[in-house]
Length: 100
Image (cartoon, rainbow, N blue to C red; front, side, top):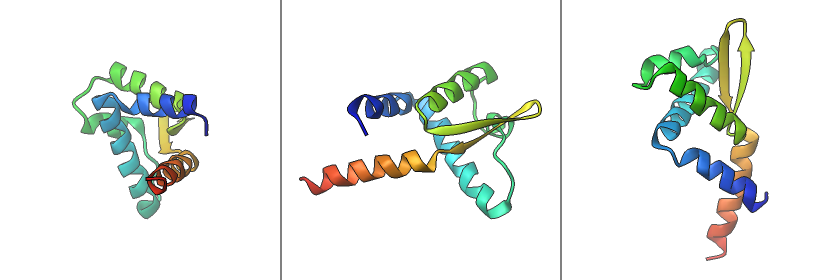
């Protein structure tokens, strides 16, 4: 993974509201494995004290950084954590930790 891509990922997570949104998506993503239900953005909006247009902007930024994967289901938007990217980031951070 190159440094430009890593910077884009960390920049996306540097906004407190965006980080909170990402954590809610990750939480819902994990719950979806247990329940079999998908994570709809409307469900997340209800749990945060952030307006829908702002949520939409943050979702777009997280998707552009490849942290989440979104999909339209009719008029609804679903999202899930991009597990492949998380694995890559974890590998790089683990490598950095080993070099100390």
